[in-house]
Image (cartoon, rainbow, N blue to C red):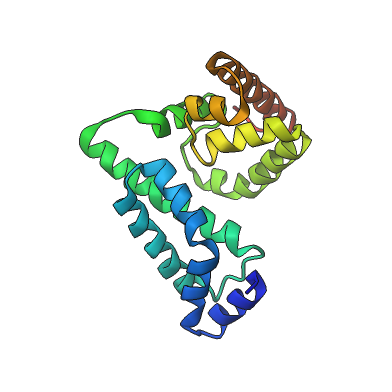
Length: 186
């Protein structure tokens, strides 16, 4: 079953849509959540919550890509769980490290003006990623979207840890320059 059929079932309020989405993208969502949380039980709970959020938000939303839509939801849920856990234990880990690296380029504060600029920022980021070579784009996304550790990236891309950190640093510098060129204050 493809995305359009599953989304049509969500729109028709057919409860089979949830099982179809789970079959199609359950492993993908579990990999995202487990990569962030490193806890299979908490990851499974995030995946289940993802299907509930899909049910609650489709309609009125009609995502172009169910995979991307569910991936974004599960990632946000897992990050929320991670933040709550870190607030309790104040443990750092890879998630906080990756987010700290990006904080050099992007501020985390949300203002009403910032909310209005979010769409323009997203377009600028998409433009930045589109201009990167495939390997650099994959490295950037694996680190800052999927929150892979430097060690995982080194293994995946057959690079040394030093090469990974240097490449990521250069990509953040390029991102900063790109955002400044697009008129964003960083």
